[in-house]
Image 1 (cartoon, helix red, strand yellow):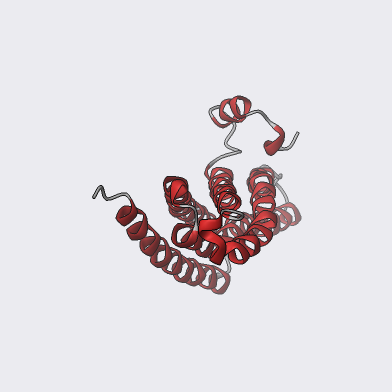
Image 2: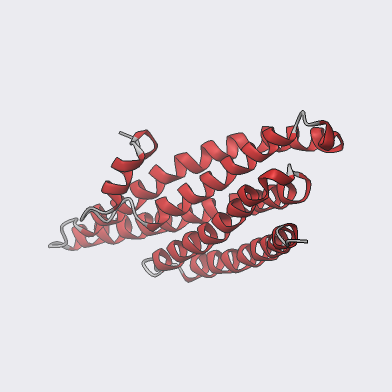
Length: 211
């Protein structure tokens, strides 16, 4: 069964089990998916309201863009768990003969690369998500400002979580060029996300100031 098909209670119990997957990478994708869903909710509660007529088209575009993004984050929950399980499986391969050692080494390298690439993809998609968050904070129904603010905090948390998972899995790769390229991407993406979410946070805080 896919992680997304579990009930919330069952997912939490699975997360709390002795199994190392799902873990932080799946939770990062889940948090990103929840953030995207909140953006869509705010957009739908803005579109059609006369007060926000000037933003109807923007909200409709956001919905069309964020909906498949939400589905991708859901898929990445399972992809992350699968990638980690492949690392574990590779580590358990026999290493008695030279041939077995070579096969095992190759399998571990490939598995760790994949385990880094999955959360990196999650992080890359969050760049777009951060822009959506900023847009609903700025243009969305003011009655939903705390929902938009929650979406912002989820993006920040998910970004850190995904970055952690990229970095730790890069420790298992023997390709320094691949590792450095991934680290550079992580640094650049985090910087962009934080700048966007910082701006969104200021708008949320300003909107919540009591006159």
